[in-house]
Image 1 (cartoon, rainbow, N blue to C red):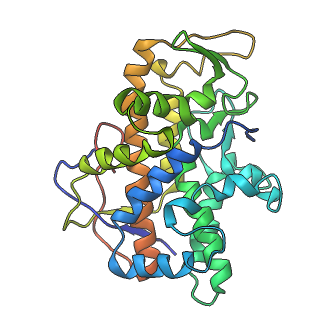
Image 2: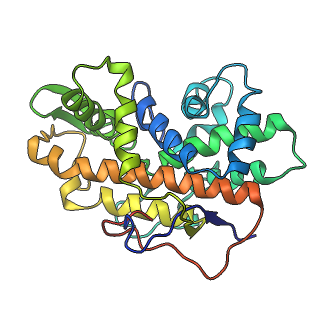
Image 3: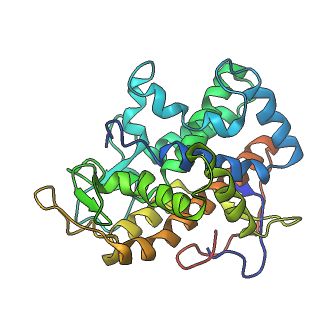
Length: 300
């Protein structure tokens, strides 16, 4: 069944592997931001259903806090989900398609799987809650560009980096956390580190004029993955030509160029997650409407 997103359409609106610890998908702050943004744009019906399910979780109190759970369990109780956090491709492959999915699953098939479970009212609340937690996480992962990676370097974890001339890390962690952490530390140095995500999510939300507006877009994990594919292979990303034998040194120009990309992907992930959850809860299709292309600066 073809599913469609429900939530925002304003003319000209925002035009838009297995990763070892500590390189977690988008980092805890990134996932929290995607889910906090999404929660703001849920319909009343969807918010009530999300709150009802999360209230049954013994570990978490808020929707935004469940969104890193999939990273916590992939090495323990849900080991089979480890490959679902990413999709790998041959270096020469220009397009993401279902055949790129590994035999044991990938990020695009995981979104389809858990969207289906969450939407199925015949399933138990426990199953639907787990699906919600996974789905919210996958929507963050697929918008972190290095979760659509070139096979062989573990999503950039093997690309050594001297970040901004200051600290040694790897390219995956740069996009998971370093760009966000630096921006938050430099913008709100007077706040405790654990509180800095809050003004950032307010800043991002202020850049998404959604109030009173509906947005419609297809549920298209392949298309979202293609966006990440195109970003990581762009010249300014410094990934396509990198290799594990060579240290790269992304400096101030890299940071300034890619900070807007990071912010855009967080906004896209949040809005799309909201629209997807709205559609899955309300169980209706919206025909004849599509969101603007996300290939430029607008938020799809």
